[in-house]
Image 1 (cartoon, rainbow, N blue to C red):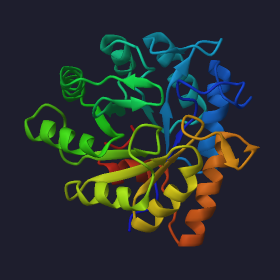
Image 2: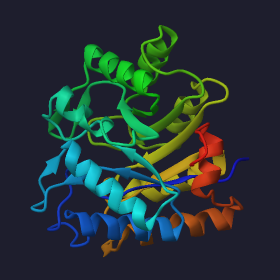
Image 3: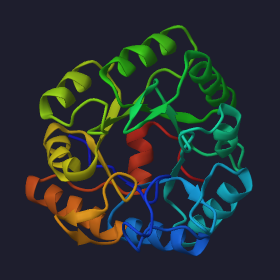
Image 4: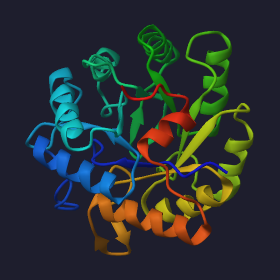
Length: 276
């Protein structure tokens, strides 16, 4: 069983300081939360960015600024910028996160339209084909975000047709979003059983499902994403930093006998080129 890759989704696009004062908006706050997660054991930081007032943005310059600042204090971390952005953003707006210099090693690619609470997260087939083409042209490895069980079949068919990067593929199964696939071990097993041989996978449990899903993934040989984007609480009613969320996953992994991957070890597991 490979070492455990932990991803920290440090701010997302929806959560606010009113919900947890530690939610980062400014560049300095984003760096603080990224460092806390990496110091605790995260090999990857999944990155959304905000303006200083908390407004989500996909602005290329803001991504550039935040990525450079994070890499100054966490020089080996793998950054996975979001191309999901926030509900209502246009595809061109969302793709700005793939325009930074240097180009990102990885980026997310959302695998279909879905209900997202009271809103619709719109990912049409033309949008997904455009995102797949961009990543193939630029040598960016996608992390395929599957919120629904049908999303897996959709992206596998796209890869088979050459419309998105193929093997080795990395999947993130986001379970428990209101309106999407429930966060159960049975659903996670169904998804994992459907991925191609040689693929890697991560699970994201939303809200109270974060740590039960983490424990299941650790035992099954998968990887784990935690962070403020998905869950604000260390336990019921207890607000903490991203670092504390990562540290809890590390404790669970230690109890179950899974060692934690460094960023360089994660690159090898994911099939990325070594950092120069």
